[in-house]
Image (spheres, rainbow, N blue to C red):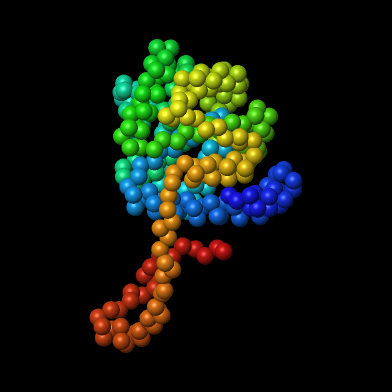
Length: 282
């Protein structure tokens, strides 16, 4: 983003405050075009990219992921959001179920929460033993170095939100019937255990914020700013070239043939009455 563009954006936002919707949508549209360019470059070069999205509940991870994937090909850029491990998965090597979702050549995988569940919710809520937790902190950096040595580009984002803003978003979910499903029992428990989760995050960073695989912290108190800043940063980490093809010139559409000509060519359209149409209520 150029200096003049930044200055214009700040002016439209009202002196560096809240982004106006028009300025936000304009910049998001520009960034989504760049994401499509990145997608085509990843496909052309056979790159393998993994992006982790971690952070507080209601910090806006899902909103950023949605804006990233909105204009991208789901066959190239896919989202992985795993649920609670099954009884069988609990007996496996901890990283095993995540390895199954790693990208092949020409793919981008976005993890909406990842193997860092062990350092966060599992540790705080007592879903793993202390020995399992300590082993994770020891082995995670080595696991990530292995991924990188294999040619995978790994990017890790932590979405940081203040307790006041998190509370405001929780209250908004309670009031909105379309968002109430987002409040899981774990979310409500995290609200009560803010300090415990803070300590867990600090310990996790102390062991896994390494030079080869650093954590990038996103200030997420403003959803719009967080989305634009995160996407801009992600694009800056993966060098790509513009492979946009030349505009396609469509030839004039052939005119439909008359019924008599169609019959002569051996095609008779079935009666419309034989098809089941949905009710047109709008």
